[in-house]
Length: 447
Ligand code: 6PG
Image (tube, rainbow, N blue to C red; front, top):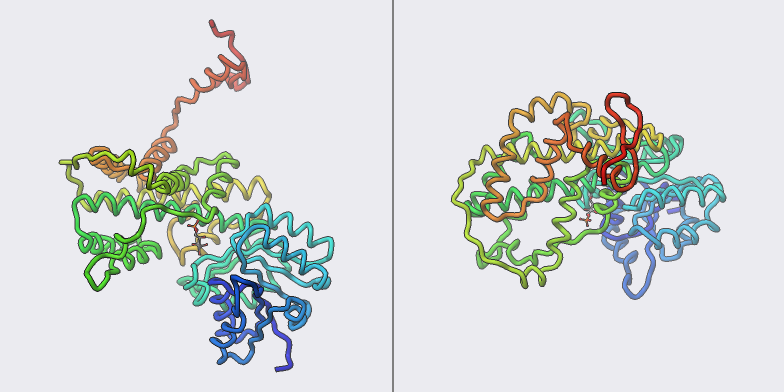
């Protein structure tokens, strides 16, 4: 094999290996690199062995040899964990890469780090793209959704490869798109993950409500029905598979799992960045809080109180409606953050294009929200019912509650923030806007 490889992949973890296989299945010649140390032994060797049927695969433990196995100008994909490790790697790459070589960070990096890295690489005339990949291992292997930020010329350079490996929407268009300027790919992926947290939590809360009255097989049947409706989603489908999993003893696998949720941090970033952009992303925040609250089992055990369950009834149709409304609002909140980022950061992001590449033609697009709002109004009582049921059953429904409060606030012209403004003026002389004159004034409050 004398020809040089079209792409280089650094990092043969779960995502790196799966994406490499996807590239090879699409007949793209690749070189792969993974470091060799105490914790990562024989990674490259084993990968090559496992994939020996592919003729256009080369593996390296030596970064210099790896880089020299690539066609010029080189395209190097990073699939390694976010953080310092990427900065260290970039430092090692700079002296061995050449002008016009391109690095594409396909990990879950923080978007502000990507902006800094592009600046650093620019000094050496090395190009950079930030790319969010969604779909987990399965997606990476068979077709992920790819959100790419950075210079459009670089996007066009990498698109012919990514086009082949990405998922396809219902119209058979590739789920791979240019988001906007540097950082926007990782930003959109970060918000995607915030929405993901919200949707996971809403499924879990729906499960908790159902679990008070129904058996696992009944819950599975309900979720299966939901999954043939507009609520159909990858996360719901995955949850159904999870709930079905049993040991040979007949015991459900989920019941073996310690009920402390973990995170990799992207949901926290999404929550903070949403707030930084002055957005009310309460559903992703509530889902993050639910994970945080769950994470100290010992404390919960210490304060555990036995409570009787509710005598109230709730019908399945109501649960489905409450789930649907909350899911729409969760997406809406996420899209609002992206919209604000587009304006504030001057990114040329196309929101419906994001909805397309995320959901294979899902209807939950922010542009549709005005039509959806009349539709949601009709079913808003379902949220009240599920919350009343939750309160009476002593169930913490953080995300349903966030969805309800957000929905009511969003659709109520009058808020009580005038009193907040008055309080701020009272003790801090901060002033307030007079709604009749539209001017900022202060009032000599009697103290
Ligand atoms: C995806 C996922 C993926 C991963 C999250 C999990 O779109 O493929 O979002 O990136 O599942 O990082 O995040 P937590 O570990 O924080 O739940």
